Image (cartoon, rainbow, N blue to C red; front, side, top):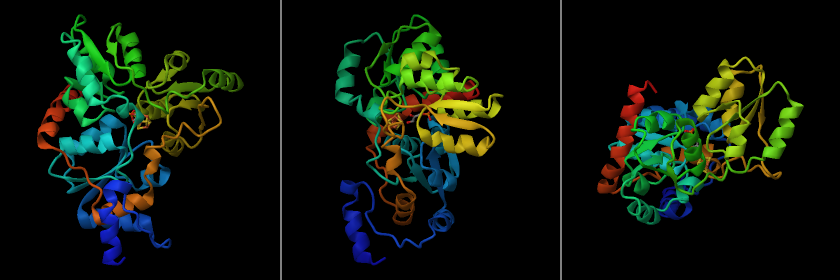
Amino acid sequence: MDTATIAAAKQKVQQRGFLDIDLDPTLDLFAEIERLKKEKNAVVLAHYYQEPDIQDVADYIGDSLGLAQQAEKTTADMIVFAGVHFMAETAKILNPTKKVVIPDLMAGCSLSDSCPPPLFKRFKEEHPDHIVVSYINCSAGIKALSDVIVTSSNARVIVDSFPKDQKIIFAPDKNLGGYINKVTGRDMLLWNGACMVHEIFSLEKITKLKQRHPNAKFIAHPECEEPVLRIADYIGSTTGLLKFTQTDPANEFIVATETGILHQMMKSSPGKTFIPAPPTNSCACNDCPHMKLNSLEKLYLCMEYETPDINMDEELRLAAKKPIDRMLEISAKAGL
Ligand code: 13P
Ligand code: SF4
């Protein structure tokens, strides 16, 4: 690749979100990524919603909690974060001396976007007697306004760690917050945010699908809406859902979360059948458009040229780190 082309692409990286360079189609990206891992002492962390090729080159695949734990403890010099922006940002918050690169800076999150810090700050000020528990799917600005961060795999344990009469604001996911209210018997005040992917499942179509597959277990992520959760046989984070399919004796599962998780489910239980839960229309809207902005080409490019990378204001980073550290401490004590 000539240096002028690379320099021009680097100049546009903030605007485009990635290095817009045409790669030789015969390049063996799998081999190149392995070479770069060794040369740069890099670790590839991928979320379960990434495309299968990305999952297959990852050193670690996990849910939001697992990814944050890996990012905190890694000794690699470069963290290649195949996920969305708030996840890479969390890695940088936890491990600031590492270079954190992301295949596409524009890989955002509708849930995170539903909670702008200035609006949330005002909401928090209107409820001064409440503490703030925030789902990790939020910006560093929201984290900095929070007392503790949770993920879908530790939210219950963390909320339970507060006295029953403690007033709590839960942000930004009203569906996860509603589910935690139900299982803990609390009345947390919920910010009105939601995930665009988990909100589109059709209760009617799932009910019909269950009738056609009477032996199938219906499993759902807690970001789904309450009526969908009500008919689920199991509710859990992506790691929880994956483990359930590995240990439950059923041979068929209807899965209400982003379709990327099916890759690991099929790999670890090749004899079982996995059916993606149907959305309200015929689109593939249970594919997260943000997660799926990443590709193997963009992953290779961000490793090779070490851009786009995550940089943060130090004051904001320290303020955002406090509630994440608290989450990691409570999780470790609970054996999570
Ligand atoms: P978990 O992998 O932590 O369950 O989160 C799901 C999700 O929507 C991430 O964006
Ligand atoms: Fe955000 Fe939903 Fe996509 Fe997860 S699946 S990154 S919560 S929009």
